Image (cartoon, rainbow, N blue to C red; front, top):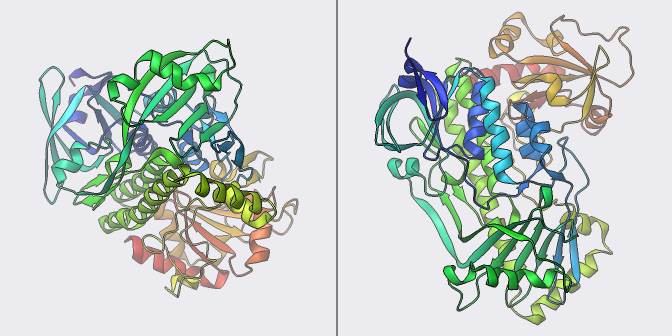
Length: 552
């Protein structure tokens, strides 16, 4: 078969002409989707207009949900190798006093909650991860020109930076091509919301000698700026443009030096400017995340100001959600109808993140000295109230996804009962340490694998399934798991089915779960590690039937 060189990859002509999924946009969101699809065995083509990773100052923060998503595709440790973990965020008033510090210490999902990185380095790791998958190809230096859909698939035409045209056919297409998304434009999807009035100068510097190992936010009524410690001797500064500033004048090296100087001691050398760029911040969301067989993800679907550091992280949540659903449909594990749940599940949460990021931008900049004093007094007071203090300073105010509709089953046996506020269904599941029967200590996700899992606490799920129900879970490819009370041993408590994975509850997390909710003996975990259902052993048959109806 003829071999051709496309972008930076050598691929078969047949694979380019017809594939299962095309992902447009090779930023963090698009490359994460491609890694997931590669892992799941889906023939995938990743396309980007740029041949190289963009060297702009962009995202710098990855949260624990994002690291967990990269864990699923075997890249958590590689990405963390270039990150500074557990970085606190400090908020200073106009007098320079730190009035609040966000320093989350808990790791409910198995990873640190605030990690600082440099996007070009992380993108390089994610792209390198694709070489593991012969079913993933890339077209770099090609731009989407046309997009047409019919009942059986999507036809797209790409144009290379040399003027060559190529038409491709795929089953599904995902547009992860940024805020100026070509895919979104060709689909005719409106981007609702607003553009914020302020512009920001974002500067990355190198050879930095300032010792300020935190993310600093300096809140002044006349102007906000940020000073963020980055890996490898780099630092990020962000300054809001003042009246009279122009994009050209504020990027002059002498002007940037004047803005940075207050952070450095007299006579201390300033760092070298690596890159600088002026950004306009948007608070917008696509009216739809799905049009037929095409989907929007990342900045193509939602744009938020950077004040909460969740823009890229929201895109990674999109990636882990849409990737498993496309894979389930293409592999015949689920009907195409489940793809509608991507918009149902992701759009509301993305909108919540846009709103809180916008609110934080207003919070950063007090209107005057009086409102600043009131804010400072509030944070002084909550230091004396541990529960309120931890709500803010342990980052518990961060809106966590909770899916009340979609691929979730509420109520015992998936009965669709009223959704209890405390229900874990639709939420991301914890990730404690567990131990295999061979004595290997692992994080939960590494033990159960990257697909569906049916977890029984102190019981084997297979013992409560009929032959027909067990066949359904097998067709789905789900892993059946029994997690025993820690150090219970295997006498009399081994799984009844030889295919059931036996784990030890090393951290006692499942013990505490069952103590709090004795009826929740069984947990159905989705591939993206959200809880699809919980039930007692007597309700497992009902959950199985309900999930089958939901997926088939």
